[in-house]
Image (cartoon, rainbow, N blue to C red; front, side):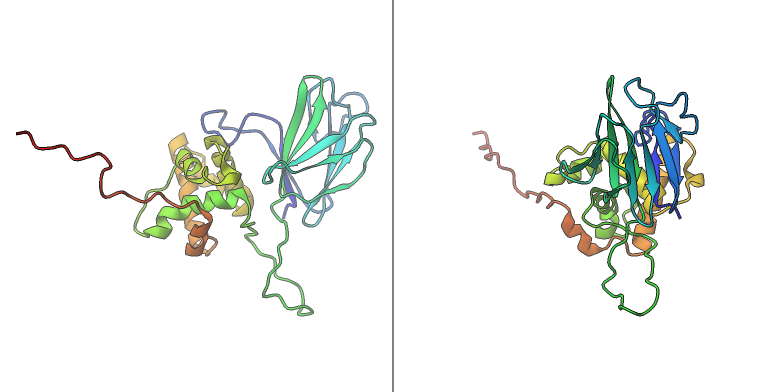
Length: 270
């Protein structure tokens, strides 16, 4: 099973209104390495190319470990930044010439300085390990959770909001759209800038990386693709108990309905 998944630079694969092919994905398992850079003489074996004249011909290397990844910066003059896409501005800087810097984030964006601003690509580490409170030391090999979801992450909030109608009313077959989920979560401090495209981004990540749903049944027309993906996510999350009623407490309080109007009652005409 892959340790990390690299989303290669390209059109947004989260927004159904753009290129539906999306960019390529590079899957790396434990021990796999992938070099990246501008390319050219002496750098013909790159795993992917960052086409900017300000990027070194061989700029760096990704290396997958067991449940995390390492980043090497081959530039001698410029550092590169790894941003935590689930954090509040959290990032690490990999200094020029630094080799094998461990990256602890599950949801990352690697940013390199370039002639035309910056160039970036995203790295997902869906196999991060989490403590199983029921595990007993010395009892043999630990069980690997097939659905390692971080309940403090933004993608988990998106999943809870997606499942909310079914959790509150099991007979309700209506699923919220990406815009509705964004509006539902925006009262939370961590989601104030959450957009429709970002919600779609998290839904895709949950679908292909965390729950590993079969994508073959969801490649039809736009409406069928997005609707089928959301329905499959909800069905799997509820079936395996990944989202439960107690998780609704993570969502913002819903506005209470008002039974009476605040407008003063009009007097009856004389």
